Amino acid sequence: MKKKHIAALAGLAAVFAVGGSLAYFNQNLEAVNVLSVGKFDTTVHEDFNPITDWEPGAEVKKEVRVVNDGNVPAVARVWFVETWTAADGQENSVTNRKTDENNELLPGESFEDEGNDLTDIYQEDSSDGKIAGDQTVVEKTFNLGKGWEYNQKDGCYYYTSILEGETETPPLLEKIRLTENVDMGHMVEKKFYATTEEQPEENSSDWVQFSPNAEGEEVSEADLPDEVRKKIKYFRSTIGLETDDNGNPIDSGYAKAEYTLSVIAQTVQATEDAVEAEFGPMAVRAAEEGNWAWNFLGTLSAE
Image 1: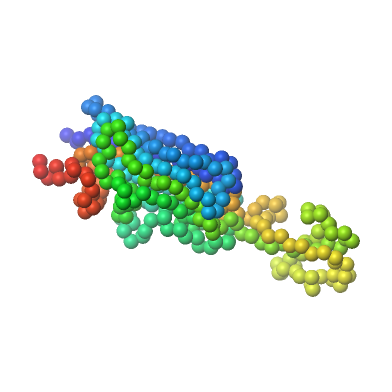
Image 2 (image 1 turned 135 degrees about the vertical axis):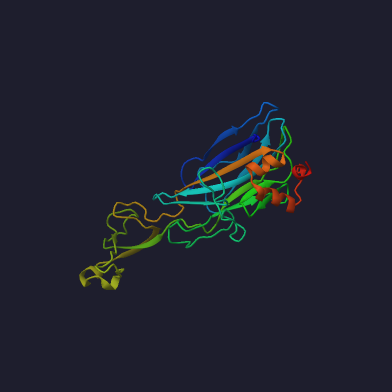
């Protein structure tokens, strides 16, 4: 008869707005195959300081722990998914683990040679205003080596000790930081001239923009008709997001974007058959090779 194992999957999502609305988070917990012996109750605990406008270079406290509120010893692993939704509708998601709709690792997928997309800061272009093709622009401070290890083969962060009842792990994630050179949109310079006797106010309609010619090339003062050029008294220029004819930003990058960091924690009772069934043989091998403090390992072969 197939054994039933106590397992749980918990998720937290923290949403940060870059130059936008207040961040928020929510939690969902589901327990599967709960046995009548003992109490299995694990949760994800998060401490973070929400901010209204996340500026480049700014750090945000975001501590993530797994808590065992029951009395059944458990083991835990965590993975992350982050999603950017730009103001112009572009969306980009990166993860440290490629899974299907059931959170199962895709066949043949391994991160052994690929690295971790959540920690490798990479922008295809830091000024084109596009977010597609980027990996991550959020630096993360992990607490690795202090009870947590990253298993590159399956893209999960493992707590290397047994999580006893009514205890919690040390924080896996401590803080996040929006990288200083993050692309805040495709900026363009706009040049204006005025022919009035007095210098117009900044937003005055008396400022006339140098418009591109029929070929789309930028027009300078020398390209203007003589009768216009002779009347020019003032010049000014601005640098800002490129906009369409309706004033909507084009390729706005991460400015006014919304950032979601989802934390998925999976726990299972601390027995070898349960871990192998729920986490897979890859996790058992990683624990054995890393000498993790999972003292239940080897019990199957000894039986």
